[in-house]
Length: 188
Image 1 (tube, one colour):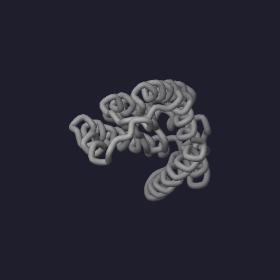
Image 2 (tube, helix red, strand yellow; image 1 turned 90 degrees about the vertical axis):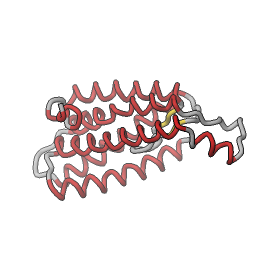
Image 3 (tube, helix red, strand yellow; image 1 turned 45 degrees about the vertical axis):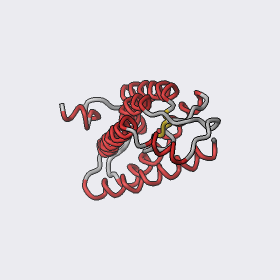
Image 4 (cartoon, helix red, strand yellow; image 1 turned 120 degrees about the horizontal axis):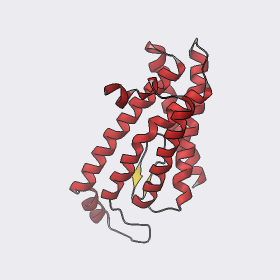
């Protein structure tokens, strides 16, 4: 059971993982639209502000694309094995499936829209409520789980181990996060 939760990539990879992962990412985007939860960064999720539905799909596409390009490149540089692009693309898509639960948790967060001015005191009262704190902690745990899945996707699809795998993953993830924020901020 632990392998299915943290490293399903030893059982599912390639096209099958890509189809399942993309179905989950599209599902998270649709749920995110209704819960007003944006995935506006490789590791980020923010709730409370409505946007056109295409923003939510674009978030998923940009985040996933950056992960695939960066980690395929890192794997090609650091791995002695031959790496299949479809395996990296599929495993990284599948690693993001847990974002469905983050999008669902977004229903527990109410934030006023831009046309509803609220004082800082009122905003702090809303942010410090039990449901918002619980949703935030749940989302944090889910993002940590997603990072563990992404690490296992990287090491499995690129056949990397040890310090080389850890450092290239950390650096790749930082680069992907920064680029996703820059690209999505520029688009919006």
